[in-house]
Structure formats: structure tokens, C-alpha cells
Image (cartoon, rainbow, N blue to C red; front, side, top):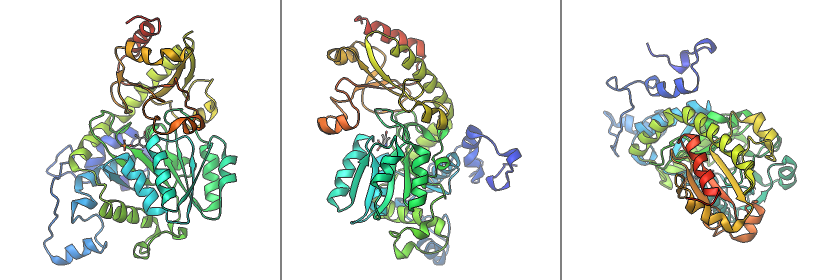
Length: 423
Ligand SMILES: *Cc1c(COP(=O)(O)O)cnc(C)c1O
């Protein structure tokens, strides 16, 4: 008989990958199918109209009516993400950005204040501008020191937003210190855990109320499907959150936040993940731990090798002792993940080096099975401009690598050749 989470004890609770590859069967397998089926239906009919009404009114837990709010296939992926984060529940979205916008636009309103990391994904930074235009003020601070967050808090501060490992500068916030501040202040602590993934770090351990994952990156892992997820860790008391609409202040307060995010973020805004993409992401999720172990080991080896190379000025990787937040990384992360950035001594060689490398693909994007390389200031942070780049610690010569699954010796050989001017 299949183990179900509710019947597990500490002695028989399976570990990370065991849980992920069996999570679908715990939800009840259809026709014995080992993979959760792809439900492509948009409409979901019911035998009795009372059942349809129950789904509409929210009294039938887990029922479906119209795919914009989810399908059995997206629900299966949601259960898998919840298993990974040991959370209370999750909602999946069409992209990571759809998940991020759902959090900001459905849980904040004009007059509110958001404190956010100044080291964030470029498109997230762009959303801060949109929020300001809507009357939500945003203060960005250096979150590597919780004192900067404390200084920015106001009575109107509803939310604090950080990334576990910032892209592209790899800064790590004072994760636990900020969690303690949020608890004191009653602010919702939102952690974008995309790069670390729930395998390397669980944001619930530092008091996060909501965890975001761009499924496109670590969890999907193949660069073949976009997706995003919001997980409620169960730690935040929604009964004290002023922005929950009256319609969603019903039943157990633990469910209020996700209820509002699903109704507003999926039903109203329509940032819905397709069942096909949910299936691809669920397959990717099965190998998350294996891939994170492999690419983290490769990234560390490559970071160490680059750091001692005479042509390299600086390497940013959390597991290098030279990293400014190395102690935070050791304290919180199981490994360093696949993101590393570096600068050359001769900034004029930055583009030439990218062209000389044969294996890394010159492309934006992160967390693919193939190593990707991009000069940061010229591309993903071009629109941000020099002032924002300076505040984020992005040098004009910074090169970002998303280390893939290739054998690390092949990558190192390629770098050796390219850095010595050949190739
Ligand atoms: C890529 C990324 C996102 C956005 O995810 P998409 O699926 O591309 O929309 C958000 N946060 C971080 C940290 C990312 O790297």
C-alpha cells in the first residue's frame, strides 16, 4: 500500500527525492498511471448542480470548474511543490513573473509600503517601478545587513521581499535576521527562492510566510517550460493582514492568503499555467536534487579554478571563502547552486571571452541543463542604467554563468583555452 503523508511518522517519512517521485501516487493514482495524467479539459462538469455550486462557493475542497483557476494536473504539481517546501499549500502560475506580480498586486494596495532587496532579478526591479506608479511605495535596501531593513520599516510596511541568492551578484540576505524583524513588525516575509530551490534551502526555516519559485529555473531544470509557484509556509497569521478582502476572510485563516492569490492572481488576472507545462515541470522536479548536487559541485570547482586564474579579477560564488556573505551561505545553504558571476582584469576582453568559449551558450536564462553565459551590463541590466547597476554591484565587465550538467572538466578546459586567447 502506498504511504500517504498523513500516515507517515518520523520513522517512515521519506526524504526529498523519494517524496517528490512518489507524491503523485499519494494523491491517488488514476488507472494506476505512474505519471500524473495531463488534463487538457477547460470545463469540469458535475453530476449534480449542487456539486457545481459547492465548487463555486469554495465549500468543495479541491474541486474544479474552469481551468483558469487550475486543473487536476496543475494541482498535482502544486502538491509536489508543497511537499518540497513542507508548506501549507501552493499555487502555480504561467511564469515566475506572474507569481511575483500576483503577490505584489493582490496583497498590496495604494498607501502600503514594501521593503525590498536592492539585489533582485531585473524584471522584479522593473515591477517596483510599476508599484510606485500605483501608489505603493517601495524602499530598496542592502539586505545583507538586517539593520538596513529595520531602518526602512514604517507603520505602513506590509511586506519585505528578498531573493535567497541574488541574481546576478550572488548576494545573500541576512535571512534569519530579517525573518525575526518581520515577525516583530507583523510584516509578510516573502522569499524568492528560485536559484537555491527548496532542495538547497527552505525559507520556512527563517520565518518566511510566502516562498516564490520560478519553476522555469531550478525546479523545471530543462529550459523547456515556463512556470512559477507561490507556497504558503503556514507561518504567517493572515487574520492580522489588513488587505484580505472580506469575501476571503472565511474559514480557517491559514487559507486566506492563498485563497486571495488564487482568486485574484489566477481567476481575475489569468496568469494560469497550462496542464502540458505543469507536466513538463513535474518531470523536471523529479531530478531537482540530483541536478542541484551536480551543478553546485561543478560551479564550486569552476569558481575555485577561475578565482586563481591570472586573467580573472573577481569571482562571486557563495561557497568561496572570499564571498562577502560566505558565513550566511554556510549557515543556510546545503550547497552553492549553479549561479556564478565573475569579472576579468581587462574589461575590454569581456565580449571576446564569451565569443571564444565553445560550450557555454550565449543566451539569457538560468538553470538549464546546458551552461549559459551572458555579459550582464550589456544585456539583462542594460535597461536599468548605470546608477541601478552600481547600486546592485554590477560592474560593466561582469559575466554571469548558469552552470549546467556538462562534465566540469570539459567546461574548465574550454575556459582554459578561451582565457589564454585561443579558440
Ligand atoms: C527567472 C527569475 C524570475 C522570473 O521567472 P520567469 O519564469 O522567467 O518569469 C524570478 N525571480 C528570479 C530570481 C529569477 O531568476
